[in-house]
Image (cartoon, rainbow, N blue to C red; front, top):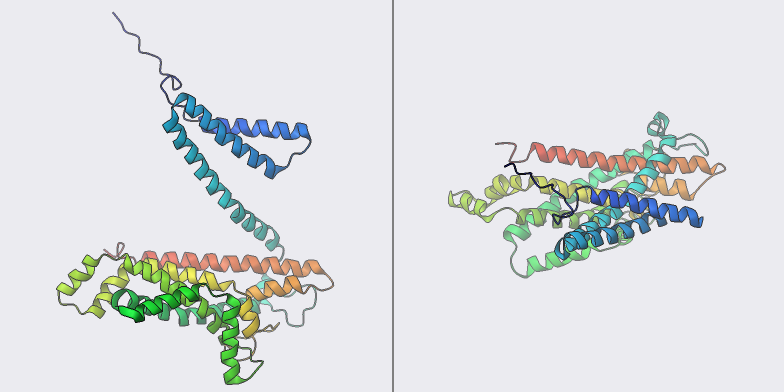
Length: 351
């Protein structure tokens, strides 16, 4: 006597078919779009929001009927988390798409090989601003990264008592200081030495270092705390001095995180405008010397191009958007470089 295998049915088995959420999303979009067209108000943002709400409700109700309350709650939370993730991507994608779309208008050789000297309308470029940004940021990193890493090493490996607590407290305060305050501090410092009205590229680096140091300290401190104490104890048990343990064991183990944190700190300061406007000044000419005269930067170039438009505003707007796109590309290049460095010097890859 032959037995016939029962027909599997996902609905009777207490489980929704695999592609149910996709079909529900498609159906929700069709329904809401049709209603919006019938009402004569096809607003795309409104359609997206209402479709998302209807999708969450329908998936929850279907799961509640077929799979039970426990699985329905799981699907509800999954849908909400996914929608929150997509919502967070909206401004990022919007900014990137807008910057790329408008920045390509002047993304040419002239923009990267000429300055704005003697240019009053069409033409010109941002070479002076690109060079200024790279030099100021490089000087800021040279000042901030060693100080930040050494401070973090002290707090994690040596710091005990009131001094360590006060340093931690001051680092927390410095993280929250407005950038304009850092610019005013640097200006006051250099004005005491060189007199009022001083504008130098190195002064901009000093101002930005006040913003960068606490970020480096915090990120490096967290990375050093992640290093297992067993590694330190094993090294010390072999008779290795503490400073060599830090140099040969602790720092290499946490190198990837330290590099990433340092690059995040660079990204934190590379787009600052207010401090550089106060202490680095504004110029249309090339300047390769951090210790002499005013020095332009890309954020200030974007700001000035947008706020001080000439007879043909479109020329200035095109330069502003291309400058913003260039700044984004520089930050992206720095992040890629940091990932490459972290991968090369990672202890896992050296074994």
